[in-house]
Length: 90
Image 1 (cartoon, helix red, strand yellow):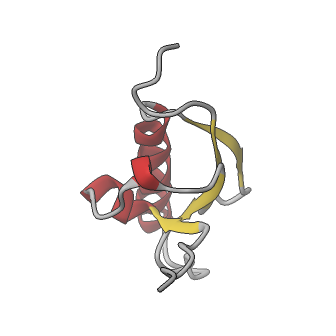
Image 2 (image 1 turned 180 degrees about the vertical axis):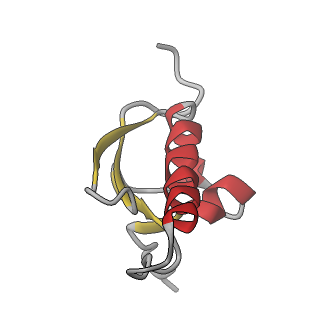
């Protein structure tokens, strides 16, 4: 039986909470996002909090061998590339 292919989209909250095993992620590229898009009129505080979650997940992944490739203009999606295996010698 073949396991289902993992998604390229990874929820930033799941990375921060440890619900995703990034070390076993099979692809070189993925994107981080918030669970639901920020609605217009949500307010600056909600916007800032959600962008902070995405960037915090980016910073965590950078310690695990990933690098930020691009960030969308609203900071809701971060495109990531694996540059080395976690634990590999630099």
